Image (cartoon, rainbow, N blue to C red; front, side, top):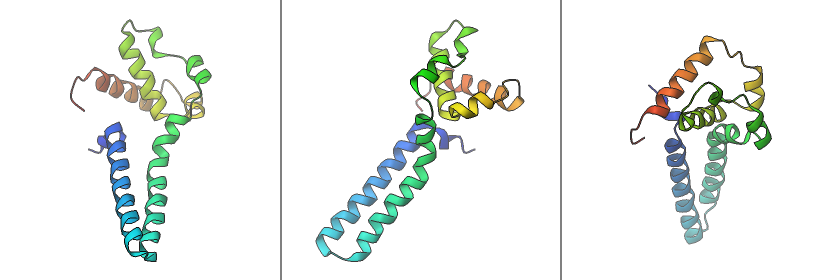
Length: 126
């Protein structure tokens, strides 16, 4: 039901909302110099960091060398586009340390791979 929370469009939408809120408060603060708007700016920035940090940590949790040494899904598949998409899904879902400690034979991981394959093969708009 809440699969949209993992999409990049949701993250982009959140960033746009936070930028609009911050720019509105900056505009109002410059017009009135009231402390409430400065407090709103600080609180909005803090809330944006709190909300968006988990999304960005998954992207920055992998170094390029770690990505290259990772056991790629492409070793068993011929479709390179699907392989790259599965690798990107893995990078988004797990940090490097979580991926190393992950049991690759668990049902949770196999469900993740099947869902990721389904998403990668979907040619929908989103």
